[in-house]
Length: 301
Image (cartoon, rainbow, N blue to C red; front, side, top):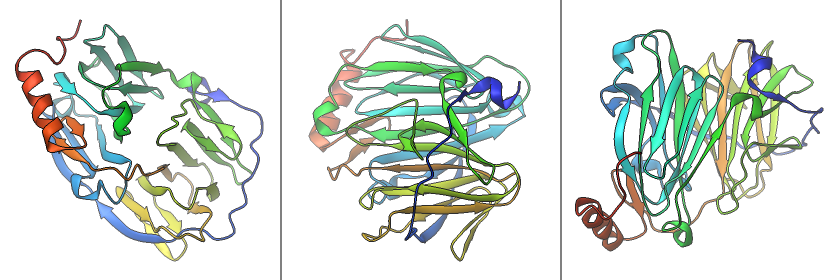
């Protein structure tokens, strides 16, 4: 499958002008772990970073061509109070949930699920060999939306807008807006930006980011240069918050690839217990009680 066959080509982008790029505040090495039914992954954005990277709660990176590392998938499990964004670089995974949604996440595609007041879903591989690679991002919901109706959107790869800049750097715009290109998703409360950036022949990529937004980049191929800092593969660089900065400038050699993520902080309390994210411990206790008593949601349909 060619790159062009899994994305939506758009007219030429409008280059953004970044005059004072953000610097790297620190580099983060992810934690190797497993989740679901034994799926091996790297937890890049962990709970201690939630307030620093508000509104983002978690980022997992997974990638293996060994079936034992992913074949168990993620059987039925609950969520409440946030959104999950699963981006598949390679592979096939089936989604089913208690609201009645079903979708097949395939190479280049995205599943965007709003758990709202409660949903139970499963994510199970539809392959028993080959490479499965991708990311799952957890995006917090504003307090006013945490008990809303859950919903789900399946975004196939060919529906994700993409463009190539003058340096032959290719960007897939999953969410937000990049160089005048609107992404597949727009979210008002948190205004997330989610880009997959490919440096085909090396070069520079420029992205405007509002000064008040938190931002980071995760390198999953090659390495990037950001100002005086080098960001090696499998590292996350957190961008410093500078009220005078107007964006980021990434430089990469041929073959480098990274996801660039930014969003507007909610500035609200975060109370988390596993797959439940609310604003107070009392709300967490209520959620656990509802789940244990069968009043949360039914199993996947």
